[in-house]
Structures are given as structure tokens and as C-alpha cells.
Image (cartoon, rainbow, N blue to C red):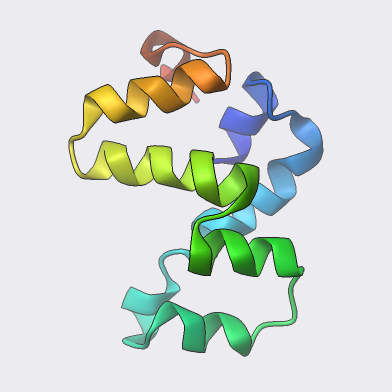
Length: 95
């Protein structure tokens, strides 16, 4: 996720937060707990918590959603999100 930030209109300033959002978004599976229970135990910015739990903000509402669309093979929706970031699928090659 952080590399997409660097190459898109989101910008490099959010790349560290994007990395955390991506990492934390998988912790429910690792710990076999609800994601909200995992996140509430972490000392992280509220915007990161909101992105992971509620899917809000640039990182949760668009970027994380885009990656979930990719995982769910919902390519049409993924491409819409990419376009919002000024990217096309070809831009993801090598990230």
C-alpha cells in the first residue's frame, strides 16, 4: 500500500500510515479476533484505526477498499479506485 501512495495522488506523506493500515488490516486473521478488538489495543493514530475498522479516509475508504476489491477479484471496482488515484492497472506492475 505504501508504494501505491508514493506513485499516486495520495502522496508519499501517507505512505508510512498506508503500510500500517495494510499490516493491521490482516491482524484479525492472525490473532483470530475481531479487527476492532485488535485495533483498540494498539497505540496508533485514530485515522489509522478508522481506516481499518470503518474503511474511512483516503487510506481506508479508497486504498484499502481497492486492495480488497483486488483480493475479491472485483477488477472493475479496483480500476475505479485506481483512477481516483491517477493510476491505471499497468502502473501497479513492479510496485
